[in-house]
Image (tube, rainbow, N blue to C red; front, side, top):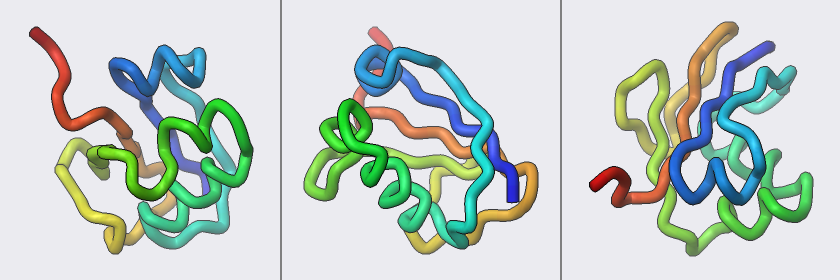
Length: 83
């Protein structure tokens, strides 16, 4: 399935882009996060387990068990953003 991924704040700066579309077989947010970590640096550094990362699915805060669907929008951001 194809999903749109948006990166915010320090995560956006680390990966060097604000968004991307990704063809994935991941079924949950947690599996998608692991898929991105498996890409290696810089994704592994900012999305690794143990790092404070918030996730949203279709603009709703979600945990790693949230199910992905075709065309979903996923957002990754640090727990504190803005000013």
